[in-house]
Image 1 (spheres, rainbow, N blue to C red):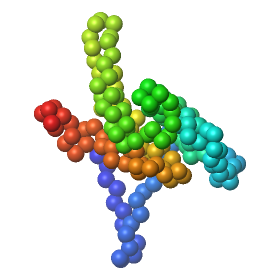
Image 2 (image 1 turned 180 degrees about the vertical axis):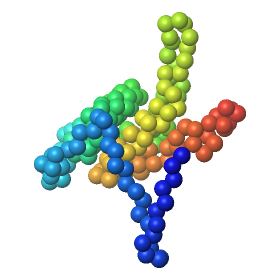
Image 3 (image 1 turned 30 degrees about the horizontal axis):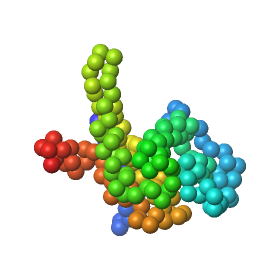
Image 4 (image 1 turned 135 degrees about the horizontal axis):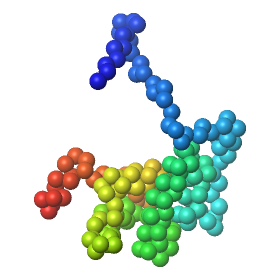
Length: 176
């Protein structure tokens, strides 16, 4: 294990944290022109399609997401799971149908979804870590929508808790 000593140049001043020098292998930095274009564009809310969650997903990736293509593919897949769930539950993809209760029900469904393997074993389809990733993407997405067009009942993922955090996993095993 290697320790780094950061000396404070002046008494009373806090030292700066060292920045990461290495970049990811699959990272493609956005060009300055792309960043300037995204910054200069505004999200306009058309009356006819602003209620569709699929439309909001497209706008989110067009204006807000700046991660690598591989990360964007994972985010699209995760948000697509929720859009599909919303369509099954409400019969459409209206943003108005997205409530905190629906977000919790989606999280429970991910946790309880079973996949039968070729050898006949029935296992959970998603691990706790995968569920946490999906819910983190959904939470960030809902905050972005809520900032632009507030939900009537508040941000639908604001009170979502992640599996395995703060002893929640232990309580689940005990049946409570």
